[in-house]
Length: 594
Image (cartoon, rainbow, N blue to C red; front, side, top):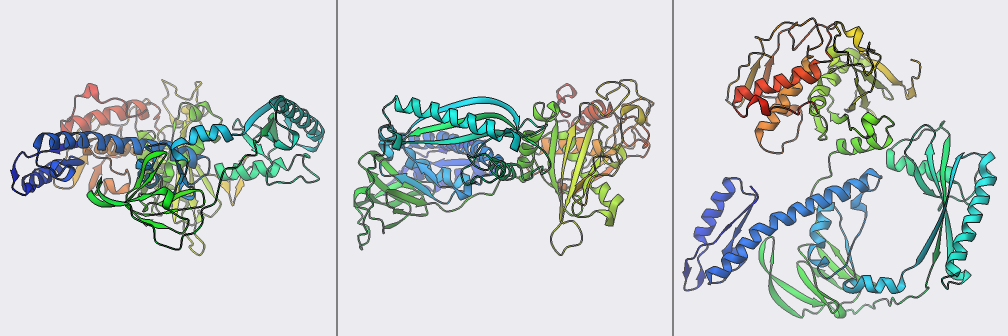
């Protein structure tokens, strides 16, 4: 439930009596309404009809604006962070007539601490058209390795593209002094398909680079920022060569503001409605603000070219060429597991990972308990905790810094063999044991089963379904090892017992579901029934006791085939749990695996 408005028609000699509305508002909040708009707070006037209109509009629009801000923040921030940028280190540029009314809210949502409002923000588009640079780009394909043998060809191609850009800009009236060029190479590691368009700006040429600059250093630096790692021994391939030519007008209309030595003059004070309600808000004229003025928020700063700029909270002031605003900080960073997923998707070669998104990422505590996850595949997320905890028990002191473990065996918390789990222990200086773990699980196209795709419909033993890894160190000491249907009981008393003792025995087929899959289905159902957006971690199962008999279809022997249990039996477990709670019909209980 998003919003509700409350309007009481009763008035007194002194105006609206808010007591009844406040009582109704408190009741609405108890019922779960996230935004309650009281007419006495939104529009403190005697007339009931206009007051009701205003409260109704506020109750409807405020949740819409909040949803817009959240979706904007999520998409914008994720794209930046996926490329290695932190929005908190940037400044939000605000322009347009209504930009100042929302700038502080957007800055808070993005974790930014400063907003810059240009002095021509209301006419910035028209102003920018007159002063904008003219850009001409020329590009040519290439399929060479970035190595000394290819440098003469690259230098010649860059020079030819530079001449093309200069000729095109001269034809538009720019002189040679107004034109500058910048070369780019579209580089990627050989064997990957994630190419980055790199400029050598800031990386001067060396004896082992092109004349345009050290593109090897530029690519390595940017790749490390975006993905967190590099592949030192892998060759680089140049997909394209690009040159950008820029013709600059050379016109500058900026005049720095001089300090005034006096406090900022308040033009007037008006009552303005913010999230906290109506506040006495000072009004300032932008033309009277100097570079040494600081304005405490909330305040309204009026400019001739825009209706108004205002911010709730924080501090504002006039800079050399505009107004800067520092809103108070708000919010927490997005879960790192989401960033893990984006990096995995971008660096992957497999279609299963890159396009089908058949993977999941999560963080785990020092005991292997789930701490944070991204909204990936449900059947993975609940099961990976079992995998991490198995490795802790199985490897113990053999878990060292620089190790990465690969596992897919059902008895080690795996689902079915094509789902490979990669686990990395993270250490802190001076601490002998891992302080936390990161893990990702992805479905692979083939793992060596008796049929293509390693999903044999008639497998009778695990060995028929593909290669098996219990605790294989994929990376050791930092070096990549290249060679190397049931009865269910429950009770409602703040805790629960899920008793699968009536489950059938392990079957001579592949519909057996590992214990980890059963737990994953259970936590998925609990999260669905809670009805709130709670974090999926180990604490969700703290008050829950699960009874699964050994040797049953839900906890088979290590040699049992399990490829069908991951996608079929898991659905039946979900059906049984939902039916026990009476929350929906079994025909509606689909979609857990994907």
